[in-house]
Image 1 (cartoon, rainbow, N blue to C red):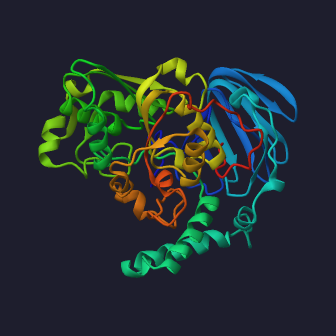
Image 2 (image 1 turned 135 degrees about the vertical axis):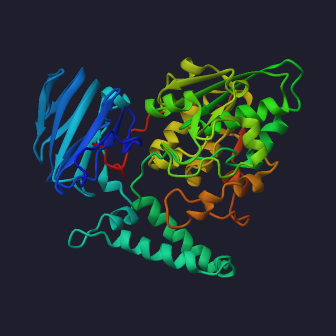
Image 3 (image 1 turned 30 degrees about the horizontal axis):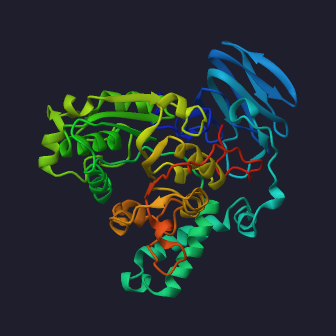
Length: 451
């Protein structure tokens, strides 16, 4: 029997100013216990339907705003929030959070942004939700029909013969299922990753280096760097192709734990410490020897690959990003924007694009394609045609998740309007077209409730 629970190694929820770790599952079925690292605070105000939330301040300081009243808090203080009372919290502090009963989907109603965290103070407008959004919120006896429908369709799609999946009616039906998944799916950042995840994308990066002169400086930013596999992979690819270039690589992630793990560059050979995937799965034996020093238990990234990489903890949605990192020749922002609700992903993508020097390149895969298409067209980005189809097909995991998961990658369809923009994962940013940072005035209720 389990009596002792250690701190989880994977975040259970993340937000603009907060990340948390849920203990358990506990044997007390009606209790959630979380460790919450508040960098700036919770990004929304919310009202609970049935859950009583209790917070104990372990360290730091800040304040809770409860029913329009502000309460300063410091270490050793306890805060209790009953149901049907609006609240949020702000400040840099570590909290131990308790929820009774356990959090359940549909409990929280988000009312407005927390301006201390997001810089805006606008209310949500649920009345503007689409019919599909309202549909997925329906529950019967506490159960979600939409979720059951998606589970059923996952099994049906997995067993559907490949030749039938290519038919127009099947693709149309898959598009409907995926639209439902994007509305219903509870979005949360994940640490799952691989070394050499998308080989065609790495080949394109190599080709874009050809015009550079011997000894040129090259600045690259890898955003949402997670456990470091992508940053190390890109550094390895650039240095193996052009060792003469003076590479500076900035890697940034919102999770302090992930950044600290990535900075060490030590990975367990037998099992992943944080990710739920075999992080070496896509590497050959020769590539592993070129990449790592091994001792039979762990693989350590070689110092020649680590050289020149700076690791940062930060939020890539913040306008101060450009001040922190400075203009970059290449920016890679892959496989984390899909975990944001679309309007937040759009805001973040527009902010990210400000990092790219005029004439530089932005790589952005693992994102809602409607969002990427909209921002690229609005901003006048030039899609890179070289290896476009190969890069789109280059990550089998994302393809396998379509259509039943919100992060799944739809099959390439050349009959779609603006298909080259829609399916391009690399763009050149022309001079004068980098999008300004914008703050949307309105937002639908969050798809993922955070503690």
